[in-house]
Length: 510
Image (cartoon, rainbow, N blue to C red; front, side):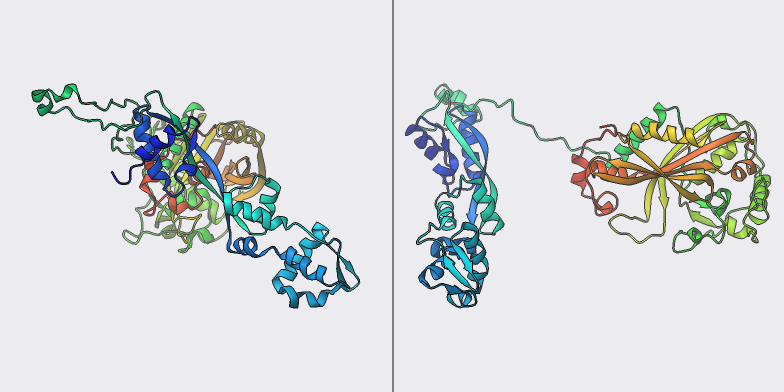
């Protein structure tokens, strides 16, 4: 085999009892070729070797020029020392060149080779050692330099470049021999018949070699992180809400949450509206057996017409302690079909179910929502929202803050800040900021608040019951955990399948 280095490696070891570096013995051969030959010998225990990371220094074109002709500062010194009465500063560029004068003058002052006397430059000594050139000549010969301070200075001046190179240190193994004997890998029928197998050396099995990976499916990183969040919610006693309705009416998506019908979020540039069918049917009584709702919330059928009228009244003229928005509320607008812009519409639906038999409850959901946004590195037209709600009697804002601290601590976020915010359906409302150790800064991680009384009472929730609500995106923690900077590399047609298959599941508390 022409490209094989097994024989040269064995010859090199026969001439030396000391370890040998591959970069010294085979400087012109590629690393892959050297390693292949070393592996062949190592599997037969003829040699032993280890990989070593070595820093290689190379000269830049400017460094080559200085190594051959001298440094900028040496040229400046030579010009000054020849002028016995001193050299005018203005005349220096004409003698040594503009670039040499600009760089060399400062370095010559730094070394103390010259001094300034009014408008003249004078030499402080008769001769010098061009240290910069000496260092570069050493690099030219050996591709290394022991003086770390000099290396840093030469790199700063862009006279050298540093690269990492893998070299191999190899020594004789327990079964070292001067010659490499070819080993057979298969026992054939002819060998058994003619008896040649008795004199043939067979290659031993390598039980440490890795076998080929079995092709298999893989969970998407979003699904892995989603399952981590589900485990956190289940651990804290939450029940998962049904989120199988991507299409919602404007009533559930906006009106039930007291988003006014003139709100910018309802414009075409922010929301995807369905063209066919354009609207949903009007409100009617809830069926006794709803397949989309957990059994334990179906205590009795609910009259959606009454709820519809309550929401209409709060929007148009005010009710349940609210003065309302005081505008003509449109039933047609409320029945328009949209791709849901948040999963809070599901929370409103579940709370309305809960109003049939008010009791403490904890619900969560993790599913897709849709916004009519321009796609860029941090935004998509669809993403995942994580939402949680807690309904109970006697809840307070302080309790919400305390719960958020416990909830986010399970994701290894222990430093939180809360900033007052506005949401149409919660009051008070707070943005949640967490200090991210990896990024070294405060980042917004969620939104939260207590649902407004007019929202809860209009659906039948009693006055003494309060509801916490909070939400965050699934994509942001996933991008942070997997080190993804462009959301299009996480979700969509540009995702690398190797990224999905090779990344393990993460633990949020780590």
